[in-house]
Length: 210
Image 1: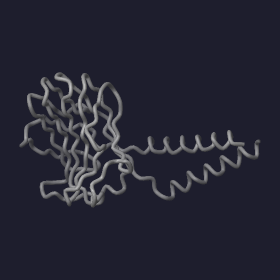
Image 2: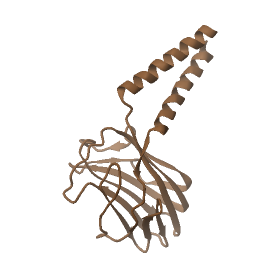
Image 3: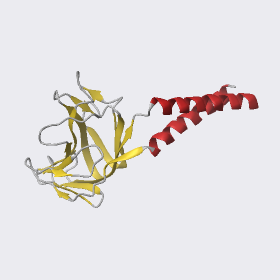
């Protein structure tokens, strides 16, 4: 009987994972070509489903640009930095992200880079991916899960003013390509209830068969 229940729960978890993957929405398609600049890099309008503007920054002999479906950057010495920033407008208008559960992007790195990824609200409080810089190597997916992120006291997810993804050099020479930038919405109660009923029915059916 225990085996049956474990299998049923596993099937239910699989349903939730499939549901999440199927409902990922593109955050930034990286189709707006944009060259990186320094501290005064310009903001550009983009066809993002969340933020209206984006800018690309690079510092200390690094390079960075967006185009052809990806954000690419390269470092030639220690101290390089590449930033990808998002906002609504220059007036710091807020955006309600309380309906978002997580954000993700694929990355392929040659060398090693450190990642810092955060959201800022109208109170200048932050929601950060982790509490410290995260080393990134090789090929994989990075996810900012709002339910497990480090959150400053008073952070308001319904009044976000901007988001920044930052990479810093670890190895002297490093480069990376970021693509498939998406987000996942929080499942609606009705959807979760339907999944729950499906799991109950699955358990019952397996019990009857046993």
